[in-house]
Length: 76
Image (cartoon, rainbow, N blue to C red; front, side, top):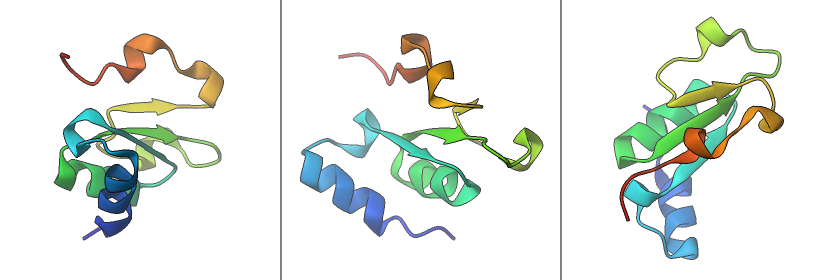
């Protein structure tokens, strides 16, 4: 099970609820922790094959691949 404390702490520091936050990372631990908190997740594939990255809302090859439509979290 992934450690959610860093994500909870980041949300607290930013003053954002997890449901309105996107976690960025490069491994499945990021996806696992963000899912536990109800966050969206975007993984940067880098050298990791995409088929090894599971459950992320979006997987990109580089940050330049992101578009506003990839980042939509919800209403409001």
